[in-house]
Length: 80
Image (cartoon, rainbow, N blue to C red):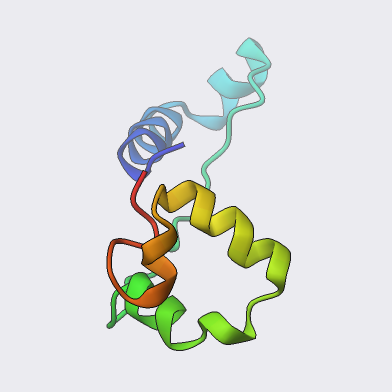
């Protein structure tokens, strides 16, 4: 679920008062939002530690990137 949708749902839930919520028997409730914004790109962090990844994970990520060369420093590690 993306952040915008979650915020819209939280707004809708906030408009329901507790008595209306009980009458409608809705399971909806407010969900706290926590968002992390890394100060560095995930690609650069991953590339610095690529040799520490288990072999299976390196293999799977090379398939996701679509480029075997991504593991040699060219291309986008997480390009889809």
